[in-house]
Structures are given as structure tokens and as C-alpha cells.
Image (cartoon, rainbow, N blue to C red; front, side, top):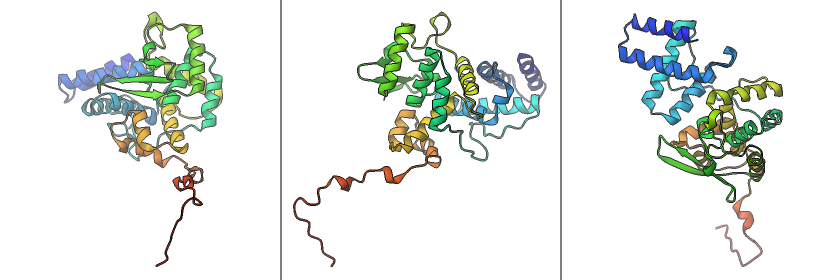
Length: 285
């Protein structure tokens, strides 16, 4: 694909684009290429590219995200003659909702993963609705086994959030520590450095294929699925906003459109009042 990027660069140089724009677009395409270079083209759908830009927008400022979006749209138009059906910020032009896996499908995917490190990482992403970049940059010190929490840092926002870990996740992570003995980086790759996003996408795609689930799902789909499943379980949307690290409630609210909430499962607070205790006087007038 690098030769295609060179073709794209020459096309821009011969057109109306100044040198700064050419350099910025070229850099944006190379960053994207490093994420997808080992993925089959069939997986690099409009939705995949849209999710990539949306996650980029959650980490970078809006101007940088829009510039990357414009670069990708121009690249696919010039090189492949393909019009991406997304806005430069990643949203679908027709506001198509993100792909969601059912809880049963999530289980099937996890059951196919035999590598304990890979499985631990994917489980953490689903447990807390993590972005892939957040998961791969976790440190051992971010994990508090006694309090059952994980600290997730956002370097771009200079902030952090502390998220709860389910008991079964803690049990599995303890097994991971016994077997893999991570020292600094929680999920180290080569030379002790964090995994690349590309590698995580690859072993997720392998698990997806092995599970027999025919969906255009990516690692980011686990985050989307967690959000919907949490709402269906009765989680307050403001708490979900905090867990996902969204700056705006509007970003979180999209999941309300996909959640199948059963109101019969909610407990009405009036049920905690003993109506036989004390005296209640009611008047119809």
C-alpha cells in the first residue's frame, strides 16, 4: 500500500494543495495504514473507517480529526475511486448506528481465544468499554486487585477515571499474572512495549472468524456492545458517560437508540415504603 500512498502524494503535489497540506495528509494516511496494513480489504468498510475517525476524535482535537477524515476520503476517491459514506469526523452520512454484538456473540468470541494475554486484554475492553488505545497503554500499577478497579488515563485531556472490575475479570487477571508475569506494561508485546492497535485488531479478527460470526465487527465493536448491554442492564446514562470517557452526553445518548430496555425489570422506589406502617390519609377532593 505504500506505493499507493506515494501515488496519492504525487497527485496532491500536482494539484492545488500546498506543501503543508500534502505533508499533513500524507502523515494521516500513513498513521491509518499502520493500523490496517494486515487486515483484509473486505474488513476496511466505511463503518470501520468511521469508527477509526470517531476514536481518533476522542483522543485528538476536532481539527486534527477532520483533517485525517478529509485525507482518507480524498485518498480513497483518488486511488480506488471509492466515495466514503462518512463525514470527515467519522459519522455516517445517513447516521447509521454502529454494529452491535449480542451478549451471546460476545461470549462465543471470547470462548475461541486461547491465548491468555489476548483474552485478558479483550475481556478488559468489554468489562469497561475501553478504547483500544486505552487498553494497550494500561500499566500494571493501574490495576488495583484489592479494590477491584482499573485506572484509565487520558493524556490528551490530562485526566483519569477509575473503573470497577467484575469479580470474574479479577479472577481471570490473577491467572494471567501467574502465567505471564507482566512487570510494567500490563499487556506487553515485543521488547516489553505495549501492543500495537493493529496487532489487537488482528487477533480479534482471528477470534471473530473462528467463532463463525459473520459480522463487520472490530475491537471497537466490543466498546459499543458494552455500552448497549450496560443500558439494557439498567445503568444510568450519566454513569455510562463517565465510564466511556465521553465529554458530551450527546455522544453517549446514541446508545439509547439501540438498547432494548425492559422497564418491567426496574424496581420502583415506592416499593421500599411500607404502606402498612403509620397512617396515610388521602382525599379525593
